[in-house]
Length: 421
Image (cartoon, rainbow, N blue to C red; front, side, top):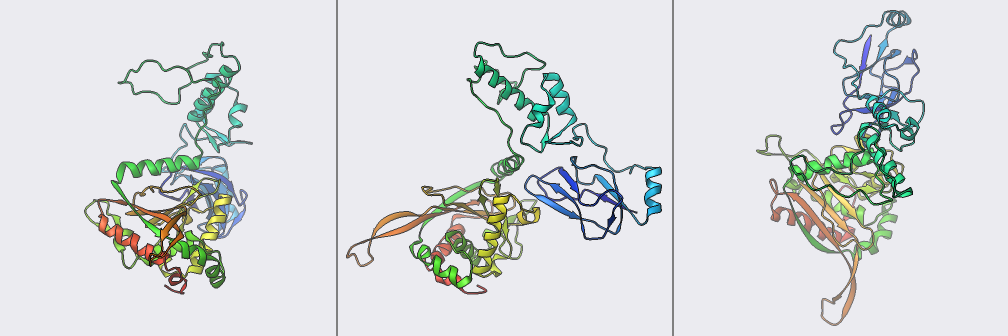
């Protein structure tokens, strides 16, 4: 018999939602074949069976499960499975479901036990919570729902007194107990409170850690991308895939891995040295309506422009569908943040923990400059290329070397089209 426990899918989440089993209870399982789907804060991940056997399900779909929790057993034959069902034995080291573990739901999101208790306390029907656009309803979502309902009632009848069912619903923020500010006025009519999506909560955790842990500095250079923009169609035809400013910038950044390795390093756990893994693994930001994702271009320094372009297109399509796997989002040692919407002049990127540097690419802007010979003027397209960096690892000179190196390649884009740069 083989126990199947929830694996550690990523380093960001303490638990994952078990979306569904891909094999029915009692069904035959083959090692390496898909067994179940789990949802993390960023992606839906398909997990494989660790061995052959007959599946004994112990945890239903719809539950949130922590790494290490016993989910199922794989039995070598029907006799073993029948014996286990007749005499179930709980594993001593399998964590028992916590009070906040959700029960399986028949439709809509999963309600945790504390959420159900809070709904009863506030007199809110469960149907209102089941209508929320979240996968799991916890006590916090119920409090936000209560505040939203109260605001809606107040908007409908401004003279009505706020309901006093159970504990008053919380305001959007509360002052610390040691700062007794005067009572704030109630939110104006029409105020709407809504919980953050699971994806955005994960973003919040990451950027909060980044601002808390990384003493970042910032510098930027102007890059003349007139030739790069003009060369895009020609280069796309040569490599057989879309080539725009984002693709060229990723290719140029990858090229600098050999020249500016410190920008691809990380601080060691004890803070006394640097850790540099082989290769340029570039995280690129995509925000196309399904949330912010930062998938990774692996071994970008050993990839051609065409290979990078095709990888970015695949990431772009996955971002549209929200269909990333966790492995697509892990392992970056530098990040390129794209801020190329028209009118964006400058952006300061976040340096993620475990990285030393993050570059930001703004939108092109038209500038009139004198000709080199001074005989007239010409219109050029410039962008701000910025770099935020961990000042514990890097100084301005190292980052300037990286930026000016990328700038030189973008201003001579045909140098990026060679295979196996």
